[in-house]
Every structure is written in C-alpha cells, then in structure tokens.
Length: 566
Image (cartoon, rainbow, N blue to C red; front, top):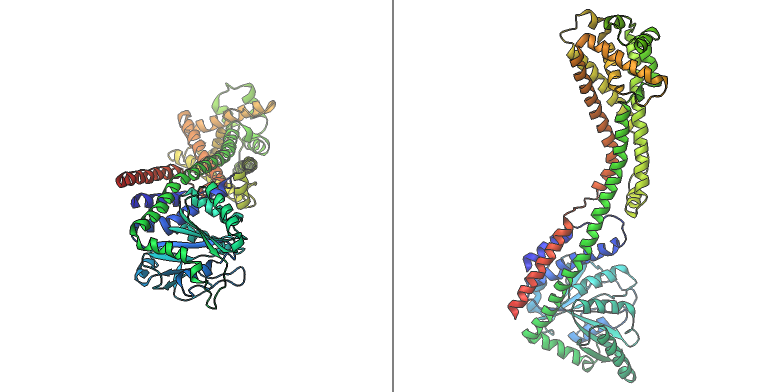
C-alpha cells in the first residue's frame, strides 16, 4: 500500500494543468490538496500506523476552540484569540511519552517545530502535558471561516492531517455554511468526526441540539458523537468548570486507553481518505487529457498556418513568380533584351551556340540579377511569415487556451519576428553563395574553357537561379508566360553549353534542395514562436493514464488489505 501511495503521489505531481480551460482552476486546487494530503497525512500515517491518534479541534470563529482545548487538558496550553482575525501558530498537545512521534520528519513536515507561542503560521508549537493520556494528541487549529486567508488554508491542511475531527460550534454559529462544507467533506471521506456544541444556554440545549443532530444525520454524520458543553464562567486561567467538559474528556480518554477503539478511528479515517483519493484523481486525469488535447490543437493550428506559408514560398520559388518585375528586368539586361528573347520565343529550334553567342551579360549585370533575386526572395519570405503569424494568432484567439497563451506570451506574436528580416537576408545570401560554389565545383575541370570564362561563375550562377525559379512559369500571366519559358530555356541552354544537360539537372535539383533547407529553417524558427509556447507548458501526454493506473493500484492494494483484515 505504501509503495502504491508513493507512486500515486508521483503520478499526481507529474500532471500539469497549465492551460486556462473551463474547470482547470478547480482541478488544480484539487490536485494540490491531494498532494498535500498524501504528504501531510496519508503516507506518514500509513508508515506509522501505531502513532498516537491526532484529534484536530476546528470550527467557526469565536466558537471557543482554544478554551475547550485548555479545559480538556486542565491547564492553559493555547491562547484564545481576543481580536479577530487571530494569526498564531497551531498548538499540538501530547503526552511526554509520545513526543518522538511528532518530529519534523513525520506529521506536517513543512511546519517548523517550536516550543513557545508564536504568531508564525508556518510553525507548529509542541506542548508536552502529562494530563493527556498516552496515545492521544490534541491540536488547536485556526478558524475555518477566518477572514485571514492564511488561517483558512492552514485550518484546512490541519484538518486533512487529522485522525479525528473535533468540530466546535455554538448555539449562535452551528448553522453557518463554511463549517458545514468541511463537515460534508468529512462525511464524503468517512472521516471520524465528533461535534461539540459549545457555549449553549441551558434553556436552548434541547432545541439547538435536536436541530443540530438532524442536520448531522441528513449529511451522513448520524453516527458522529454530539457533545454539549453548557455555557459557564471561564476561570482566570481560561478554563471552563471541569464538569462542563467531563463527557468529552472521558470519551477522549477512553479512545486513548483502548488501543482497539483508537485503531478503529485511525483506520476509518485513513481508509476513507485513501478511498476518496482513488476516486478524486479521475476528474483530474480527465482534465489533464483535455489539456493535452487543447495543447495539440494549438500546435496543429500553428503548424497549419506555417505549413501553408512554407508551401506558398516553395511554390513561388518554382512556378516563375519570382521572375516578375525586378528579377525579370535584370535578367533581360543580362542576356540582352530583344533579339535573344525574341529568337527563343519564335525559333526555339535555333542552333544552341548561335543563341548563346548573342548573350551580352557583364559581371555587374549578373550582380544586379543576384541583388534582385535576393530582394524578391526576402520579400516573399517576409510576406508569407507575416501572414502565417496573423493566421496562427487568429486561430488561437478562438479558444480560451489560446487566448491565455497569447496573453502570457510576447506581445508581437501576431506579426513576423523583428529578427526575421536580417535572418532572411543572411539566408538568401548564403544560398546564393551555395549556388556559386556549386557552379565553381561543377566547373572545376572547365574553368579554362572559353565558355566558362565567357560567362563566369556569377553569370552561370544567376542562370542556375533562374532555372530553379522558372520550372513551370505557372504563376505568370499573358506575355510573361512566354518570357518565363524563354528565360528558363535560355538559362538551361547556357548551363548545358558549359556542363551538359545531365549535370544541369543535377545542379538544379541540388540548388533547389539547398534553397528549401534554408527556407524551412527560417519558417520553422518563426513557427517556434508559437509551438515554443506550447512546449513550455511541458504537458506530458502520458501523465493522465499513469495517474489512473496509479489510482487503480492503490484501489487494488486497499481491497487486498480489507480482504486480509476480513
């Protein structure tokens, strides 16, 4: 059982619910409560089943909890709060023989142990008193309905660590909502509960006690003992007359002295807490599944936007789109506007060498083509990444999870990153250098030939870029289609004159692949601005099923232990 509980604790800590989905806040709080209960009570208690029974005294503001504790012990061990809200450390009273059970490594390990009164809610004051029988410890907790949030949180933690809840209320406060929320939780978990109706005038005992008993029965607590503490004068030491608390004191002494009865109380509460835990983890696992699905949808939305952008960029670099405008004009200047293109349009079967001999390109003209290609490619990348960012943002705005991530992320997610422009410039320049290096490498044995020298590395390089960009000409219209076709043919012929047709096909494919690699890298960096937001959530898709499996193992161990007891 202990091993299964430790595994359940691990599974709970591995479940994260970072997205702002409906119900997430409730399940985050439930998960944290379960982790704390395992750490503060269930696992320590399971490992030390023979430790003294811990009775936590809790209840409403001003119900007289501290006075009751002092009166039960028979001496002033805890100070009643005269001003509200009272912030002080909880006080645990135990028999001196039992002191070793309440060290820092056992009950409520996050609370510092002190031996003096303090206003630090992060401390637990230990008081040894031989007036308590061995086997019993009493803890005075803060008000469950305190206006101070820290007090309410601590009260809930202490009650979750109790073997027995002693709920103190009064004739004026017994119907208050907040204490009943705790009592209902105790009923749901089969926690051992005793109720003390404190400060009750004699003439109101029958009416109030009868109503309170009916309320307890209707909420599943009909077997919980109900004690009446009559209103009485408090001594100068802060104690009620002994006879007023005699019934409660006798019952607690009986539990302390009867190991079997005490064991029954402890195992009832412990088993109820374990049973409730195995049931309560399933809504958390379901919520975690929803978080994983939502995160995957967000990733898919971002991927779709950037995949579309990448597809558009790659299409535009192959269908002739880039041979419009500036690039086309500079290429025409390089090859010689007019007769050469006319000849290609009207006399495609012309002798290759005659066509190529008409080229008038100069080194500076090749550089102009290179610059135009660079500008066109950069603009294409920027426009498509800008569009992708807008689409991804719009998709994320459609869901609460996406809106939450957008609000928590950088303010410019809806635009292409500021770093994209210089990155695109560098990537395009690097690709152009790749192309020139391919030409240089392919022409290693031809550098002294007249044709190679005539066109030069730069001239052959821009011709290769044109071949890469004009494979179909599908994006152009009208006369541009013929021009693109002629442009492609001319580029191919120029390259074939130097390298041969098979080598040209290989060069074009290699240059195309190199361009794709660089563009994919740029787009993926932009994509990561969105997918990185999802990755940062660190949602473990397998955690929900591991949590369910761990809960089933605890349930199996619980069932096996009950069969053993039978």
